Image 1 (cartoon, rainbow, N blue to C red):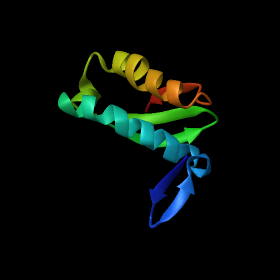
Image 2: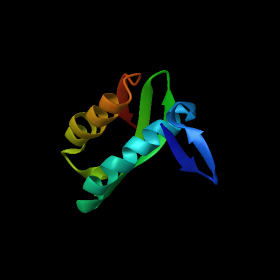
Image 3: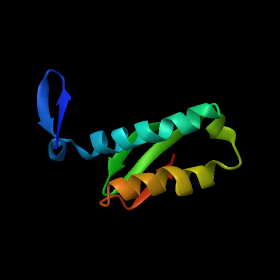
Length: 88
């Protein structure tokens, strides 16, 4: 599969892990933004994705459920190499 990026073709396999995670987060963001929140990718290291929940998500009592049952589930489904998603 190829995707057009920066005026050149780049195979999806050539994307860095951070780029892959960012693409998945782009799919999740509309749901978070609908409730006044967002998610920011901080780092990906040894199969662990570190994110920062922002906006309404940062103080929401349901943020852990959103993180694990929403964000982490989708990321692990699309990128099997990911072991865990943690909020920092």
